[in-house]
Length: 157
Image (cartoon, rainbow, N blue to C red; front, side, top):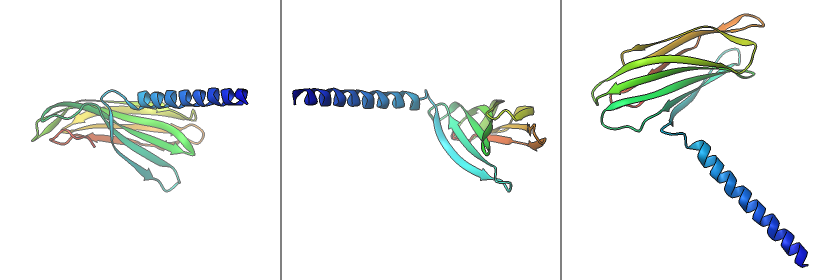
C-alpha cells in the first residue's frame, strides 16, 4: 500500500513539474520582445486557396516618435505554400505619419513554389511590397501586394 502511494506521489510530482515547465515555456515563447499582433484576417480566392494576413507592431506607442512593424501574407495552397512579408519603419507626430524605410522578405514552405521577383518601397505613410511567386509544376503565378499603413497616432494596419 505504501508503494502505491509513493508511486502516486512521484507521478503527481512529475505531472506538476511538467505542467509548470510547459507554462513557463509557453510564456517565454509568447513574450516576443516589443511585438504585438494588432490585426489578422483571411482572404479567400475562387480556386479554393487563401491567405492569412497578420500585422505586427514592434514598439509600444507614445504620443509621437518612431514605430516599426511587419505585415505577413501567408498563402495556402492545400497547406502553407509561402509567406511574403513587408517591413516598415515610420515616424509619427499625432497629426501625420511618414514611412522612413521599407523592405520585403519571403519564405518558401512548399518547394514547388519559388519567388520570381520582389521589391519594396516607402510611399507616404505606408510601406508597399509586391512580388511574383510561381508554382513550378504548372507555372501558376500569384502576385502578392502587401501594404503596411501607419496612422498619425502610430497605429499600424
